[in-house]
Length: 259
Image 1: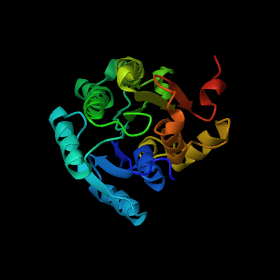
Image 2 (image 1 turned 60 degrees about the vertical axis):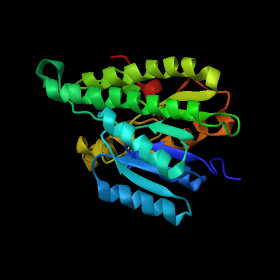
Image 3 (image 1 turned 135 degrees about the vertical axis):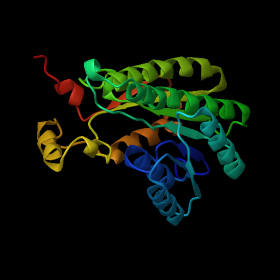
């Protein structure tokens, strides 16, 4: 039996990058999937088509996770379609690089609203649904939050993103603590430098190649590297893991040198 056979997963920011990788991985391992997106609807539909080609069910749903009402509507649509949520992956994020001295407030606030508040909305509604539904198997549900090594590393020109990621890591432990009586697992993943369309907004192909040579594994991470970690944390094999932070960075943080 596949590890996620018969389960329903909701992944935010799933039309591209890490979210797309997670959606496809969980579908390959048996799950039906709600593919959330804000932009790139065509790519979201491509993910849905790929999942359906595997013999699973999927739906795309456009919602800005910073908009609480939109997230409420998304969960309602997901429950109407599938009846339950077994796995929720809070992946959607936003970032614009600006030094603190020059940061535009609207841009700064938007980063917090998506990367921090959006995670809260997603996780709160997922938790409420999981508490209300019948338990199947060992756990009543699995929540996985996608954070970043930015939660640990104060990268320049990323103050809002760094703040948001540090906050959601602590939020993970709080939520895990509160949901233990319901046997709902909550964990967070800190990806390192991952080769995604979003990353290529800031880095050229030459930057990617040069950066990979400086990495301990001599490559950037791939969306599937994070997806495999999500799959584990969302499975029964991780039944005894909650409130934990899993760094998936190919040794990046270990290799950081103090100047």
